[in-house]
Amino acid sequence: MVRIKNPTTALVKRKQKNRILSNPAASASPSSLAQSYAFPLKHAVSDERSKTLGDFMMNQTIRELLGRLGGLPVTVTELDDSADLYAAGLSSFASVQLMLGIEEAFDIEFPDNLLNRKSFASIAAIEETVSMILKAREVA
Image (cartoon, rainbow, N blue to C red; front, side):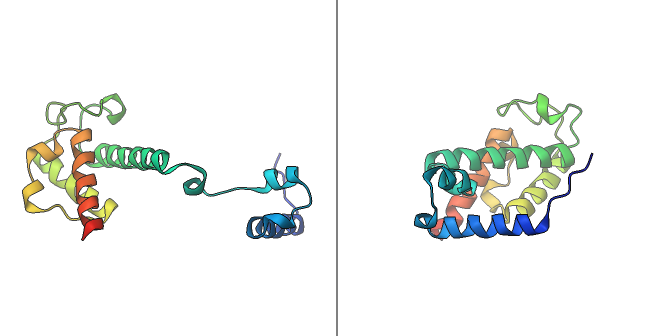
């Protein structure tokens, strides 16, 4: 059974939520205020936890790209972050494809000194390399 929402009710609720979020004092009761807060994830977690979430998202993106471009005979979910990708079946051609996918996904460019086997040896090594490039870009 498909439930159809009343567009007028949804609009009124959205306006109330926006009013409460922009002016918490406008709420009549504390319970309605607590129910109405719907912060984006980046506001709801501490900086330390958001870094953890960012690391998780990076790991998932790398795993997705590896699964799509790596041509591995095993599924990416079977691999530990520290598993040797070359031993798992990553070829040099696939590592180049993976590098290009990572560059596009993270909007980065690998410098020549990081274009080596060590940078793509494991998921953890790729994460470390991408993090290093992103940090260097922030500083610049």
